[in-house]
Length: 414
Ligand code: SF4
Image 1 (tube, protein in one colour):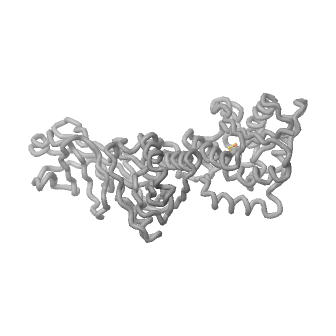
Image 2: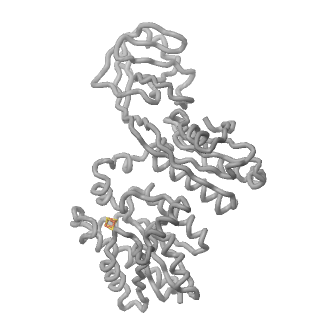
Image 3: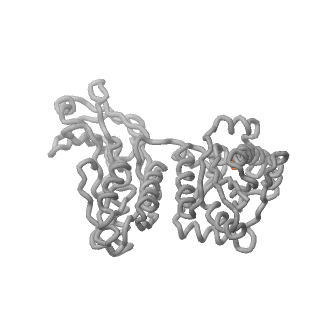
């Protein structure tokens, strides 16, 4: 017996696959991640990566289906406003399971099932009917397994937590995103250049590092989530003499209401102070963003501008606009190696506003080179999210574990 398991996400799959293996010990299990409903693509990628991680852990062959978002949008057209568990969800199940049964035929499976059956928020009967409908006449039997019963749901949550699996906070599609997250969706839909603190890109990077370290190099990994005060730049412009200057904005600069017009008062060190609104301009050797080593609590609109504009800035009135947001957020720390290693070095997982930061291939090189020392316990590496905003993750780690960490000096990082 060969069972094709349609997989919707890692949390729903982890217990389901284990139980399925226990109940069908003689069967071959094949995973199929086919979820073009998931929006945006970064979220899709994140869920797929975590599915890859648990399938590798459980030694289950995994295939990825096509991300045919447009086909899925067409299939649910006209039902965008339906509530969860309504007609749109029925069509969504049909769409994903129909392709799954086709794929089951392609790989010679005799049975089909889906990890959607594990989700506490899905209608079991609706899924059963959908599975049976798409399998009709295909020669493939649908297994409507209710593993939620008998403490299955609790076990699923326990295992997800134990394995530090990313747990999404909405079902998957763009319509569910708007309904289930109630107004706080802009950051889910916006993708920034690089990996900004607390972003999906940053989390994706950390999960990619973990997948490589754990699965390819067999290194121990552990994650911690930490809360921090996130600062995000929405828009900003500094004009002098009618010319917009190339600039970056110092993190934790607050928004400017309307347009701020201010005159230069004095230059102290490399900073020009202005007559109004706390405006400051820091002159830089070249145009680049700089990480905050420590957030000093100063919250004034501050632009970083190349020093070649000093003369222009000192002679003219500045006109500034700035929109930023500050609020609580979450990020992740990933430790590769033992917490009791002789030495722990940290690397920022996020990137600066100008997208500078360590790349995945650099990380892979470092881990490959240091693998022996990591396994011996003489070294460990901490990948810290939100590092460009005053290193809150590193401070959290030091307090939480009582260990001191030092930054890894790497020529191509910031
Ligand atoms: S809410 Fe979930 S099941 Fe329903 S249509 Fe959206 S992604 Fe599909």
